[in-house]
Length: 118
Length: 114
Image (cartoon, rainbow over all chains, first blue to last red; front, side, top):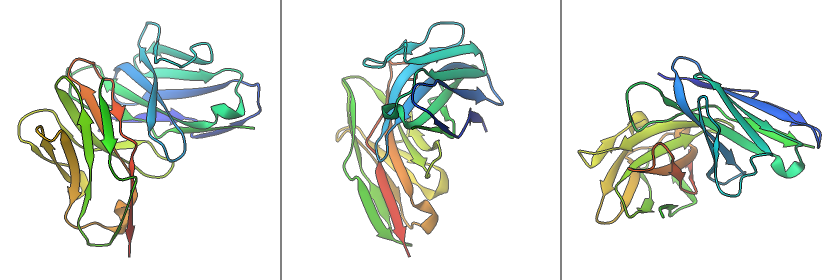
């Protein structure tokens, strides 16, 4: 099956620093990747859609300067939380859509990255 | 606008009992429907999906769901649950015209007790 890997799984940082989270599709090419944010005991909220070679599309209310997304290749998208603050602490999950095969109706999800900002 | 409502935030059941997790959606256009499972501190795993065709969909781990267009529902069922089924379950909807963007329900925590 298709595998999506996120790194790091856990990260703790000091307030004011920046943190980069990677999302890789290991055995397929992904034209589109999605970044979600999940607060404890809550659902996933779509933050942005990342297309390879173009600028990400952010959902309403998501600060694009705060959450920098780069999709430099067909297998890698990165989310950088800039000048992180405690309220940015959350579980971040990416998902990837396979390039080939048209609309299969399925996205493949990473394992998630838990960010804790002190 | 579309929305997804999972009617139960928590469902406790005993092992080997049947379970139904409810999901209703609202949309003015055709939709595709999904159920995902999330174990603690992990990403989401697809259980099953409805794209078209038969309204009864069978998925992994013995789960199934039935698409009911008139009631705009997509309830998830399992005839006999195991302790290992304890997890958070999310219903998700994708509009036919929205590309790959998913809208998730609030989630249902299924707890299977011995």
